[in-house]
Length: 281
Image 1 (tube, rainbow, N blue to C red):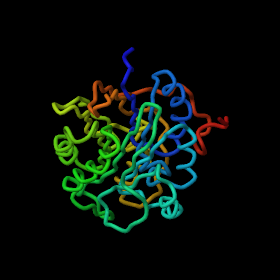
Image 2 (cartoon, helix red, strand yellow):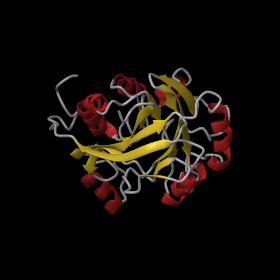
Image 3 (cartoon, one colour):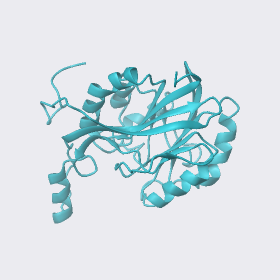
Image 4 (cartoon, one colour):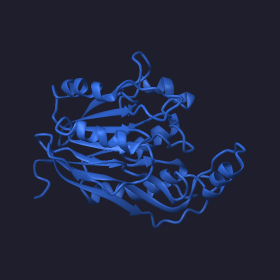
């Protein structure tokens, strides 16, 4: 009865490396069916090796049941994704990057519960290789276009600082149904619904290893920082978790309930040097 006239949307915190894929493989299907989820969005900025999203991994995540993948500063790090972005409306790069670059920054998608708009944006602080335009001025115009089709709108704001993400949370209140922060891969304890009906969280977390540094192998990351000698990062495999946010959104585009998720993966990986598991599925 609770779900009548509501759209149930799951936003998955940043997927990091092979551990993230392994965790989704063993948790996502049951989560979607058990919680009667209508639409799944995930940030995949670190889905390939912890940095970027490759074409093969994008297709794999789509097959796992994720409807829309969003990116961040690493969206163009893998060469094979650049041309693929022009052909795939279900992968979003930040909308406030310079005009004319490959891909799209927002889209409207059909679900059994109605249409939903998704926007991806990036912050302006801390990124040396990716420079976004002012996201606060871009947002209202994009929202206006999406509202021609639906009032249900999810914004993924990817930024390095809590200050930027909190600013966007209040700026977007009443404009969108939810503002899901990503960028630091550390889930914050501030999921709430603001006065205008917008659900927000400063950072939705990460899906992959929690017992790690940024989702990567802690011993390797510490060694890099102690010695300053460049070294290839490795996947972290300790304490696998699916983190994210589950929302119930009304036909008017306002969120009725929001719940932060932190679900442990009980399946033990048996091949942490490869794909995490020899089993296929």
